[in-house]
Length: 206
Image: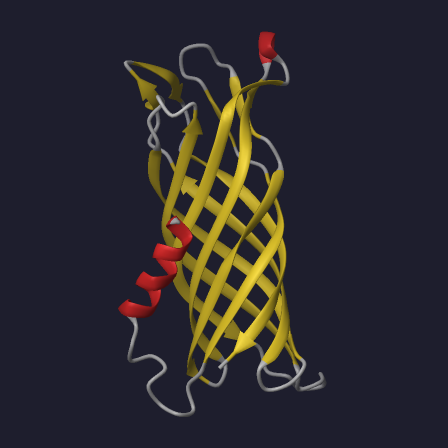
């Protein structure tokens, strides 16, 4: 599986991050909902929309300082691409959207709050992989960035919970053809699209 391969790569890329005894790693599988994502066909002015759908994935955080972590963010969504206009609400094809990101997370001081409660902000960058079905259409890989905010709550030294709200921007060059197979299904007139992901997960810390 792609996510399993990405997790393995994340660990092999940063073996020194958790080498000190005081530095730990958090793994947080999550599930949630992803919203939004649209662009316009340059030839027909038809708007294409990514249907709202469930998302799931994994966040891996590596301690670097007491309030700072390196973050690996991996997320998968099975959705559909739909159109407006004369095909209003009609699904074109199924679409899987995967994010493979790395970045950082900062946890705010806990003054006046329970020590176990840690609000945070995060930022990551990496790749968006869009895989259409049927399989005769080409997949697309684009650069993307995300900004997020949320909170962690630790039940003890090794377990916790995490809530996230994350906005993800995927760059697409204007007037770029996408999902081609012989001919091209869509010629995009857009600088990119934005999705919002709301999720909850369980933290395992070691």
